[in-house]
Image 1 (tube, rainbow, N blue to C red):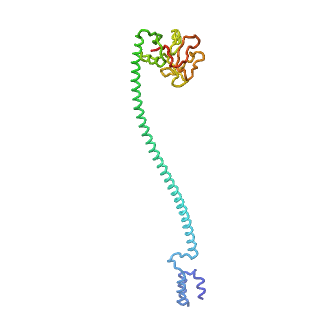
Image 2 (cartoon, rainbow, N blue to C red; image 1 turned 180 degrees about the vertical axis):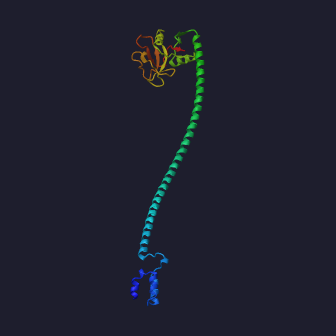
Image 3 (tube, rainbow, N blue to C red; image 1 turned 90 degrees about the vertical axis):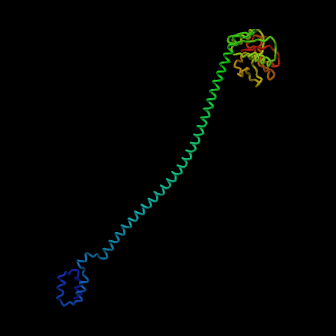
Length: 272
């Protein structure tokens, strides 16, 4: 009879237990049944299988959360590493830019100093130019006055005065004589001037020479020869021996200039 009681114990109610008290079941059996059946006052008691399933689900959820957190942590670590690398690169770029800025500042300071020096030099040169222009104007005015009052034996043609010597000297001596007179050996600038000099009917030294550089003919004022058409036929032909020029009157060909040794004595003509 005790086995029947255990098999149906899950279906017992309190009234049935009370009824059992009137049976011949001993007190021990009753106590065992009461101990086996959970009281409604104790709440719902889950079986071992239900608890195990609940724990497994919670564990899986925790494991999934842990995996997500681990992944997020790794992503944050990667982002942190990238940001650190970018920060270092920015720091390097900033250092380079700072260095370039300092170099540019130094260059700017040097350029500013050079500009100021150039400005000072420019002001000085401008002042010197103005002074030289003033002196030139004064000399031109005096020269103009001198040409209007040239002494005897000077001939006037257009805006210039000419002195034709009556004696003979070397080319160098003739040049010195002109300088002492406030003039210089004649410089021929035009066909009209060449024609005027030719019709003086006399041969004389003119202010043309290649004594500085052989074959490079220059006037006494340093300007190069630009009118070579006045050379006589086959002239110049003296090489390094004949370095000074004589305007001759011995022929009427297309060019009466001839190169001669500067040590020869000839008449000369000065011009102011």
